[in-house]
Length: 98
Image 1 (cartoon, rainbow, N blue to C red):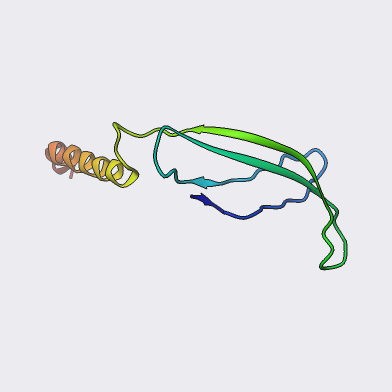
Image 2 (image 1 turned 60 degrees about the vertical axis):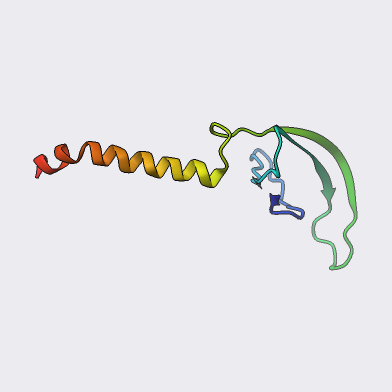
């Protein structure tokens, strides 16, 4: 699943970078494939008229990584448990400071 799932548009300003962000949640497997379509649109046209010209279609292959084969929720749970174990092992140092 890709969020946002529809099109994103941004005004091109000279000498300024364009930054677009997505959140990707793969269904499974080791790689996810997709395509980024870049369109050139005219600004300042009346509503309803939206002429576009396709400039590029960039194919993407995104490798999917996981922590020891765990899902995101499982990896977060392991992280929280590690924090709690670390606090439990060091509680005497925290109590002595006060």
